[in-house]
Length: 431
Ligand code: FE2
Image (cartoon, rainbow, N blue to C red; front, side, top):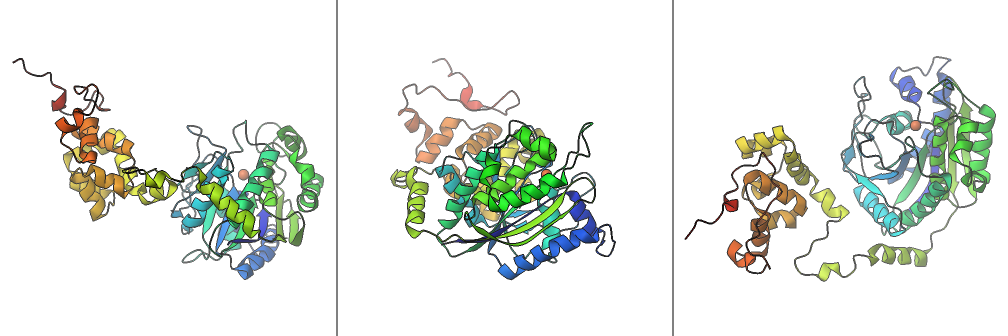
């Protein structure tokens, strides 16, 4: 089973990435940042983890207010560097550990954390700023990540206590992973800072040092603090340090501190911390957790012709689902209608994926990992009713399938006002 070796925590201010990119290691203003991160880097490279579960917040780069969520777990194959306004930094994408991510996602849901899941989102300085200082990354990053994005910017946000409980659940999730993996938890954010309003520029180094002490020795004192408490002591944006509680909740009550540092160069107190986990895995509890993970869908695999749209299917079918989902965009839809083969090729679909779409292999697409609601979009574009699709999936002619319905004349689709020729919707000719 997987083992949590320990954790590192640090600020994720863009200053860190800036100092790295501009090669300021010998500049006395910036050198303390390099010195603070060097022992963390050394520790991390010595551990050679199989994966880093990386807790951070996005800064309204890839996670906008059209859909803002509290706990978003990355289950993607890899993550590119986000463009935050001036073009992306010159860093390669980092691999995701998909199997571990999916297991963690299932386990957290089984523990009643209502997670959201993302794939193929570029990630911003919350992840890449410290990582670029911590790991060699040319031509590729040495270890994969499982990104866990916390929505701490649009209130209400999760409480400190909720973050602590998520950390406890994260520990159960990692330790119940059936393969032997060495896992490091990373928490980022803070320390004290405020970057908006007349209160901009607020810092509180005394509180930062107290926080560093409490997170190691007495984290229980931090879990009942409100967000206003955190803002009063560490500035409004500094309240993001509640993310450190997720990391701390995933470790044993007693930990060994290997390193800590604190430096306040400009707007944000930059801290680094390394804690080693002293916990021992409990094989019985981990088996129980695996049973809990399987509990809700147990037996569904025996339902004939039924394919729950799981995280595994979502990952496998992502490219094809994405292609079909984009049929809600008029330009993509028009390009598809004009030349299906060219549109499939331009989107990078594999030969098999392209064949499934172009041959309207409805049941083939379901078997492949497409969710039904993409099929009805394709149907709407090409003038095929939902009932035609249902009949085809059952291996029946339309008339045969309609006989199984209470209202056999009811034929419909999700087609809107710009749909093509819906020949099946013409009234029957008078006898
Ligand atoms: Fe942040």
